[in-house]
Length: 193
View 1 (cartoon, rainbow, N blue to C red):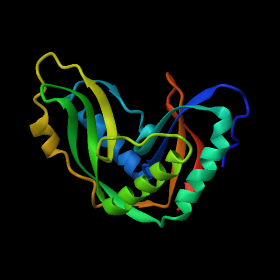
View 2 (cartoon, rainbow, N blue to C red; view 1 turned 120 degrees about the vertical axis):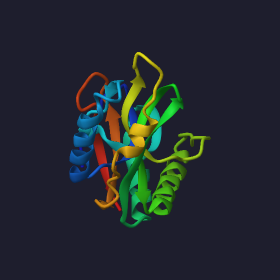
View 3 (cartoon, rainbow, N blue to C red; view 1 turned 45 degrees about the horizontal axis):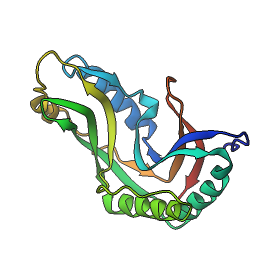
């Protein structure tokens, strides 16, 4: 567990499940193989691969200890489960997508219950739930910048899934965003299931 900052100010925070070391390496290999064929402006730094449970926004530093206590309670109500990585797809306009992502497979119901427990516990502290349906995914790249319209759907369907590499989820983390850094996300605290 990391020490929580005591200085004034705020940090941009979100709650997430990190990708296992083995899957991170496999995704990094796949992304390296496909970058030339999928021209996106910014590819996610491998150590930053994750599944978001809840984006919290700018949080005043003095509120972080209470937030961590609430998240610890959420974690104590859940048990470990297994996920996998499936097909690749995009968000945004079909001809110029803004996000390239990998789907998540496995115990999605358990993941959904964990996400709901996290958002319910943080709501008691004044954080707001997303109004959109929860769609777990791993962001791989952002901002398509090809010279012609995006024609990558056929390519994406040919990328092998990593479902055969089970990914055991036994914790989630509170991340702080450090813009301009690599990796961009720093662990503030960890919460064991």
